[in-house]
Image (cartoon, rainbow, N blue to C red):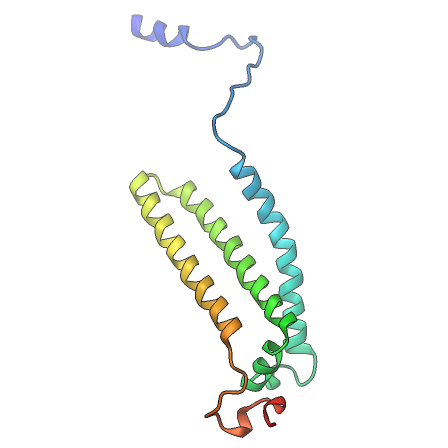
Length: 154
């Protein structure tokens, strides 16, 4: 019985004023939450612009081939567009999965392993995607002429 009274004595009175505790953590989760909302809006614009250009203009999906991609990526604006779409989508998705890991992984070791694998996957996709966008050769020397974009025949 004495053990129960000691626990009750530690509780604050319901009428005691609210005392804000000083937190030692930064505002990372707040900035993460704001980033998710802002990046979601920007991603909607980027994705629907991408879909409109690829599917609605010209011959639609039937026109998408090596020459179409080569023509698009020969323009720096489309390289930056696709790079922004890749990076924002990956950061947005990785942040969302990080939140899920934090919510559902109960052990610290499990949480650490999952976050490490997530970071590895993020890094591989972003590095390879960025390399592909900026090192893509629209006019490779040994490609058949019928597959090349019209600007390659010089």
